[in-house]
Image (cartoon, rainbow over all chains, first blue to last red; front, side, top):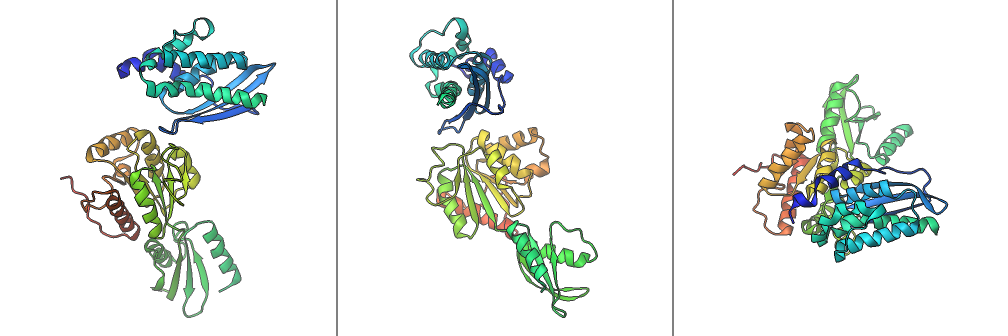
Length: 142
Length: 236
């Protein structure tokens, strides 16, 4: 696996788009996750309406993989339920760690991360925004 | 000394401003001078002497055109901010304390910035640009980067170069330093800015162990604080 293939154009575009970057006023839930080994961190804020994500904002101090993953969530998370998002997180983990095929349908965009499979030390970079979102949703419901 | 004069000095000390109390040895009259903030005003000679005394951190009697005065210098404590909770920082931070300075270790990586590794040393697990903005860098602050990771070191060096920090140092080999200087220039810093970074860091004493490297850095830092003519590293 070369660095070029890991950071391919579609992934870089996704990271640069930084969809959902920023903060929310009066979020229902928020959470921060960090990687103790590299210091990367992501904070996610959500607002819910009728059990679905009405708005999501994130702040990322991290690598391109983490930025791209947060940007994908900024695009895909609004309108979804906590159960949808938790399932998406698990499918992403299975794709990275167990080589499961990328999801089709709503989450087919996760295929952008298939080159990361070959670099286990970077799996957490991709998963961190999803984990932070799941935490934030847990707090919003709790 | 008037009560108001004392109150003003105490306020400045609490606000961590450098302040000099000038007492006329003939009349006993006290005057408050902010050596790095006040315009020269009516007594440029006194202002210059106060600035010089504060820079050297040395109180004493000086001769002014208006007669002898005693200049009492109150400088905020020297603070050393170490970026990178690495092996050398474990030797360096306690030494900084022994030298009588405040120390703060900053590292966003929690596995490094752990209390077990830095017993009793103030630690923050944050990104340096955020931590340094909160700490407020001034002319009594030194910043030394130690991570070797540009992602962590560079924002700290950028913050330090935008401040009046009296000492800025960066651990790393000559090759690392050349690449770092290029990155800082690309961020818009001038050659004069970049030249403020001591790197390779420390006095050239052939330090080999973490403890020796810490001695070398601390010595250079003291030299910068006290205005010593320390030997420059040669480009050998």
